Length: 583
Image 1 (tube, rainbow, N blue to C red):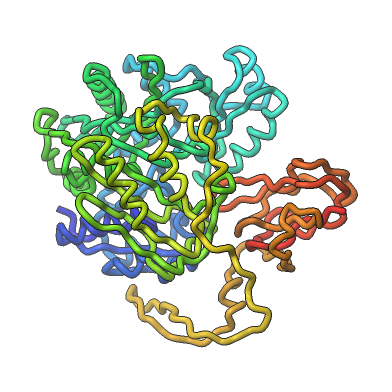
Image 2 (cartoon, rainbow, N blue to C red; image 1 turned 180 degrees about the vertical axis):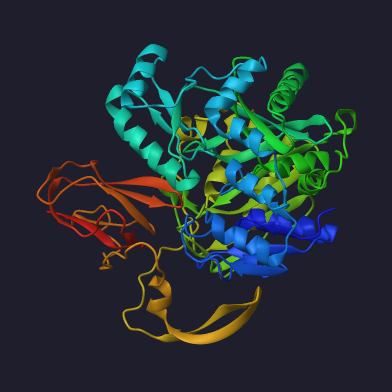
């Protein structure tokens, strides 16, 4: 068994791994950016080391910095969590070359399945059909248009090295192809460090069903069960459950066996997830995520297995502790991803400080969170605050238990997806499992959603000194030092991107008749679409704002002439900052 594990990640997944390590008696090492210097995962770990920087590229994707920490702390295992380096074959390889165990699949399997194009080829060799699409990277917008005209619109542009909906754009016609391709490339580059993309036919009403697989170094491979992840917005999962409702046992078994075939075809080891689309009684291979999934918790609830513990055992060279015949699945589990998003405004990102946090309790209720009360959800990283998971003897019991738990959950200071979860769980279509991946955005009336968070407040006009507790790192150990600093300095400090001017708009001016367009959230301007003097129409896109690795178009809500543009590409902006003035 490994003696010390470094978790090359942050947030709830870092804490999730650390908790299992603590149960196994294995010391843990956290790494952190400047933004995360006092984050929950840093406070929980046995040791913590600074990486520097604030963006992902400057910190959690800084290979030299992380390798330096590995050497310094003496860890003999690295768990990547999900995202960041979790599916990076080069990083896995260099970790292994140092004689450190990579708690994940071999680099060769990551390369095959991490590139979604080669993954489709591997599935084809294994006799598992894929969603109709291309087997070569997109070279230009002409490829998109040609595929759309041949296969029929809409089509999906998908990041070849991505997942989780990042770097995916749906194109409905040739006219929108170039903008979608550019946006997909930017998102993929920002989140995965690679901009390559491929094309798929966009199915109209599929269910997203994925299979949890596990394999060891001795040739044993099993599937633990399936998860239905069909409730999505912006192609990202919102609710996951296991088992998939209404799936007959023969189809379930066929999907599980196909998933194991895919895993064996690429020499897979450790935990992995084979994602499939299911429509009209047929299932198609979508991709394989070569890591632990966000929603692994629902599989744990129905099998009563600790998947992280199993990962560590396999990475230590031990055989699987389970066989296909020994796996028993009981009851039904549902997970709600609690994201920092304003569901009432198109699920836009909502970074900020959590001013109050009250967690639910009671029978078969689990919370996997990455933040405590007083912590700040940063614009620089994914917006997952935590995962609420419940178990029940059947689906309807689990559904009502989740509704009760959501009523008990209190999160103030930021907008969250809780109102959307409540809407979905009470909807007749969800209750009868009559939903698909596009159901929430296209068929559910979300106009009644009301955010649970208070409105953002402007910073004080006068500087006041307030006590701040800051960490100091000495030889890998962290000490807490209290200093007195200006509020404004703390609120807007930090290196990296250029800070935009911060004149504030009144609360009523965003999108109002005044023509002052203000930022609805913290973020970074990635593209300015207009120039001073341009005539604009209501609804026209003016700027592209990236927040929490997602691109958001800011549109004009009145017509007129652009009088001022107060930002440029690369500027960091805060909530309420005036960006464009239209006369």
